[in-house]
Length: 257
Image 1 (cartoon, rainbow, N blue to C red):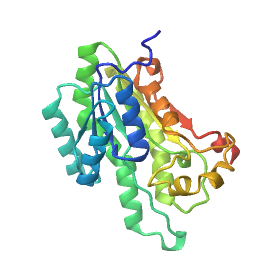
Image 2 (spheres, one colour; image 1 turned 45 degrees about the vertical axis):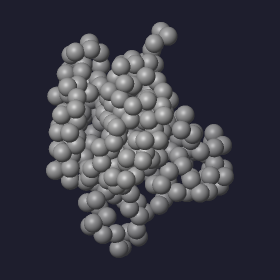
Image 3 (cartoon, helix red, strand yellow; image 1 turned 120 degrees about the horizontal axis):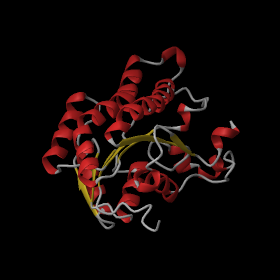
Image 4 (cartoon, rainbow, N blue to C red; image 1 turned 60 degrees about the vertical axis):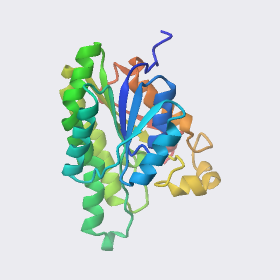
């Protein structure tokens, strides 16, 4: 039981791992024993700098790339395959949002968000499935895929972020479908639905934490430890019997809406 939450010896990839929720998860993984954590982000300088900073907790490796296209997805998978023969953990965290009035909401705001938030996690998991299967077989344990969804995919947010909410709801259902298929390969697919965490994407929580906290039953926004804790649970042996489920990490705001 004392090693139930250990990630010792595991190799992970966290997309969008250079900042925000992704960086919170990376730090948690490294501090709980991951041998290596790869991160990817579109901006190379930012990705490299983040990897350097996160390396104070363990080995963090930067692989910059654009995951908004299938070519970018396949390029990342090929790069990981060149470096590793197995992959224990994949966190599909890279995402985008778009807010605009219903009457003027553009196709570009739909396609960009839906592709990155829902299509990319599917095809990256597909491309890396051989390494995930190899890790399960070699180490006789469950490999993990963790999709980062959102509470906006569960309860309705009044902000006009149509493609974001729809894509996150779709990702939650996609998680269930992928989990049923991949369980037989000893790959567990789960998701986390974060609420308010301070990040570049959630500037309201970052810049107006007190006001946002007043609307949350727990009375505060999420901390890095809150996010890391959920991800470590799902990634470790402690979460082996969680298949297809989405863990809501939001201080109770979903149920208060």
